[in-house]
Amino acid sequence: MKIRFGYSAIFWGSCALAVATAETVPLMKVTVGSAEFQVELAQTPEQRERGLMYRAELPGDRGMLFVQSPGPTAFWMKNTLIPLDLLYFDNEGRLSQIVAEAPPCKVENCPIYPSKTPEVRYILEINAGEAARRGIRLGDRLKLERPPAP
Image (cartoon, rainbow, N blue to C red; front, side, top):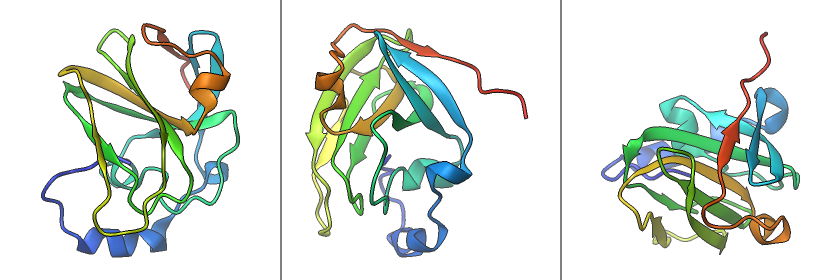
């Protein structure tokens, strides 16, 4: 989930009331190297803030994609129940960093996972270990397939 520094803690308590599941959100296909995933696109500020919080499971071929203006970013695992791999991509869609197997966090002071590069455009959250299992490597390209028309 995306961190917005200085954001009110009141928001976190209300998140449990508005949890979306992959079944209720349209999915789009993304490819990283040769690995394919069906992902939810975190489009609204609320979706970006919530990320995959409160999810008890995530199928191995699923994930969540965050798109931002190019710049630094930071994620954390607050109220995230499953471990995740965090993949940071630059403006051209080239994989610049992998945070492998970020553990869930259920305490107040969770670790923060900042980008090591200043120009991150895309962030993909997938199940912990999927990047290694699927042979995803630094430099791999992210390819987005337009979601199907409604």
